[in-house]
Image 1 (cartoon, rainbow, N blue to C red):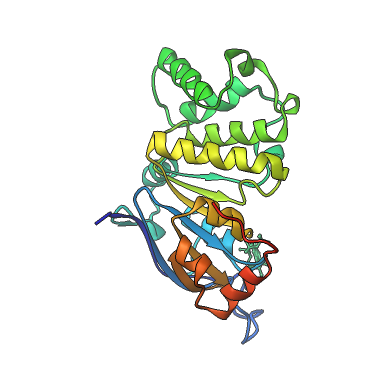
Image 2 (image 1 turned 30 degrees about the horizontal axis):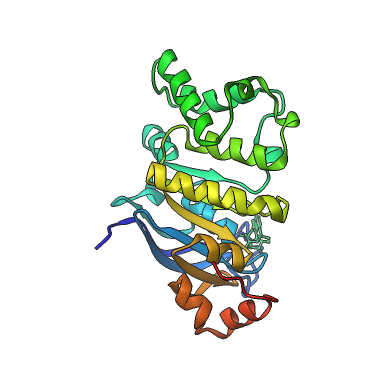
Length: 264
Ligand SMILES: Nc1ncnc2c1ncn2[C@@H]1O[C@H](COP(=O)(O)OP(=O)(O)OP(=O)(O)O)[C@@H](O)[C@H]1O
């Protein structure tokens, strides 16, 4: 039995700012969801725009604070975590990759700086070791050393996303939340980035929460998939089973919207 790296229990987030303004039927963005992700798994979260996928990712990474529920990461409820040191340690171990590498990379800094920064923030390694680590990561991405002095504006969209991914992985997290990680890229580049993420997963023993509105992309990447609708999870199953034999009408309608279901 594989152990769980994360367990989500009855997680809830309502953006209504105060009880006074909250109408009775205001819907929670994340409405009492529960699921668990096993160590080494790629777990997909799929659903239409506005269903609460990003909010879920942001709650788990603690960019947002949940109203209620538990986020149990390696046995500890991080929803209740307040201490600065505990939070910092958690932020090292749980990293996010976002949709838009144009905005997530600092345009004024070169790639060497961008990859060095996380190591400095978390005070990891000596100077020499940092350089070694950066070169090691560059090699995995297929970049040579000259890349370090380049600026984000000199890179293609796919190269930028690779750099953003490397930056997220510099501190060797074990759990990575990828929120629409390939949605901003040309279709021709998407597969390369997905394969790159798979390769990194194998090499670094990562677990992914992979968020996307694109069921084909999720199917390609994931071991198990949760389908989200209006803040709730309506179905969770192994990717193959969910794709071939959807149970919930909403999953069926999502699949029905795919012109030609792709094989993986
Ligand atoms: N910071 C916020 N303040 C108020 N409402 C928000 C905020 N963030 C999200 N929402 C609302 O919460 C709901 C869920 O949004 P969320 O971004 O999580 O959905 P999503 O499935 O990720 O969609 P998308 O892919 O379009 O981002 C939406 O109704 C959205 O308008």
